[in-house]
Image 1 (cartoon, rainbow, N blue to C red):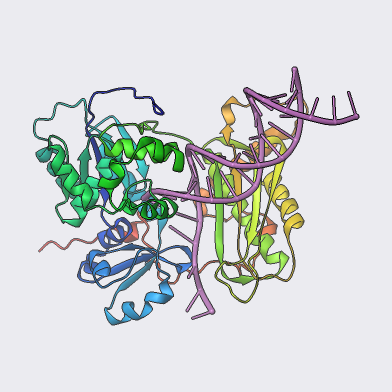
Image 2: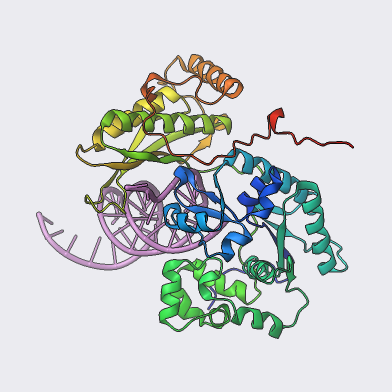
Length: 434
DNA sequence: TCTGGGGTCCTAGGACCC
DNA sequence: TCTGGGGTCCTAGGACCC
């Protein structure tokens, strides 16, 4: 029985390059004194720990843990704490990725701190030496330490990468090794840590006595397909060394959806404040899609209370609005958002979050204008261009609509920002020549 | 007091049609 | 008027990732 089409039986050589404690490494790059301390970076709103230095991991700070729960540890061990600075991390990420691109044209930018490289067709004599060299060059050129795992499939290269990190080797490869060597690593690898196995699948596998990656590799195909989905089976095949998760090589891949949402700094009850936050998110999303030259035909607006708040019943509601014409016009979009919010707002709740999702984005260039569309569309286009240009030059939200308000009493907490800005001269390091 | 945000993909189930 | 099977398309919700 064959569920999955196998395109190419030739064994591949796939490297996964992953930046170590990426956000922490970025902060340390501009402030080397931090190398002497445990460091953590917090999520938006200073909510959870999302990046930890090696030392922070060692004293027992867990990934994703709420900040207020680790404050004791932070104090005790003098941990340096930072609010996230995505502009900085994005910039450093681009430096790392453009360095990697020199090494293989077949590269998939998988996330802000990870990339897959297809090395199959390169003439590499000694793979081990090659990836060690690669690691050294990235550190030298960008200042960011990385780990590299190499194997014949993406899933196995993820395993190799974990092993490299855990053993503090920096690199680990499964290419050219015999089956027993790989199996030995898989036996020590908890099934819940396998790429593609989340909380639910882990629960299912544990219940069926599938404890590690080796157990999963040897599962019966029919059982896996019946009890999970096609992804589940692809993962199993990949553990066997059969590549079935393709590379996405599209470099300027455009997003299909665009979501902007934030938790509030403190809970919000009034419609007015919800409105101000929502419109502000809507304007940010609109600016994002204009930057990508995309337009949107349908939007979802949502409001919700905190699932952790025991003082009230959890409440969450959303509304989808289909626009008469696809657009990137901030004014049209905020009008639609407001309309949706009015329909879903229920007074009496302490809200934690609101947001907007632009769904099914399409390319503005391919869009044919409609006979019934507003004749003022050209004017609207130049207005949006003028707003975007001004905001780019003088800072975000210099020009905005009155609906976003002036009180800003919904804004998130950001008490530990390093405020590093790579486009500012102020942050250039000073070198003393003696 | 304080628990992130932004994506992608899959599936089940409903609506609709022949 | 009632009944059945099978196909397609759409959508909401869930699972997963970093």
